[in-house]
Amino acid sequence: MDHKVFCLFAIALIVGSFSTAHGQAALTSEQCTVQPVARVNCGEPGISPTECFNKGCCYDSSDPDAIWCFYARPDDECVL
Image (cartoon, rainbow, N blue to C red):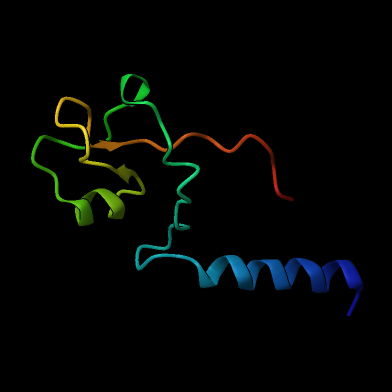
């Protein structure tokens, strides 16, 4: 097997092992570090953490005045 093909296959297996039940890659804490004023709503009021994560979004209820379910910060670079 060609070295490049093997590497791509290995990366695909690793990424797949970190996926959730819905096939979405797990978000990192760095991706979910979004200032409360910069958060973009990703869920309806009263959404549970599980429902939020299943939508592929971040959840942080530490600030009662901020959006709790919000979109992650986009990656700054492409991995492949």
